[in-house]
Length: 115
Length: 110
Image (cartoon, chains in turn orange, cyan):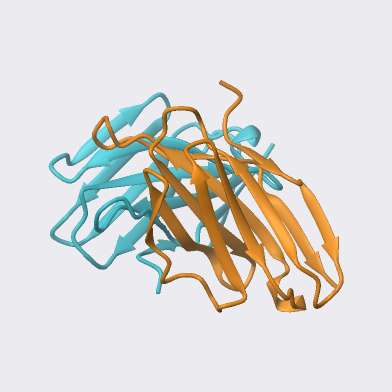
């Protein structure tokens, strides 16, 4: 398996534009997580899914953020409209909880810069 | 709020020395995990310790867990320059959620 795949790796956009980040989890994994990492706030859990269903979105900062998982092999995180303070590295991770106590596998991240 | 808090925030040692990082958490857990992050990369899982375990080893890594104190430590023995990275603890307080601490930035000088 190629691991968790995120795209794009880098995104530079202007304030007010819509940004869509994409994630392909590891095949067979039933949990998917979206995290945001900044120097100031560290690694924040934004939302996570179980079997394509959003379980906890309490970490989503504002209504400008939305996430979907239309099927087991694809998820998106959308920011509309984007703001400079959204600049961060966004990570997607997946895990398989069919086996107890297993680890999360991370993608390489998307570095978002909003100017 | 963060579930796990690492200490120290930064640690600088010489190659060959041991590095110890600590993690404290707030709620009851099923397990505690340690991850490593190289600059500009995603996190990589290192080791997992269950709530009913007190110590676990993996190569040069040793993890301890004290559930009464809600704390864990990660020891890297005989450190190498290649161990330079940020290290994070992560806890699974409920359901499938996985919460990370702020991390310890380790620098190993050759």
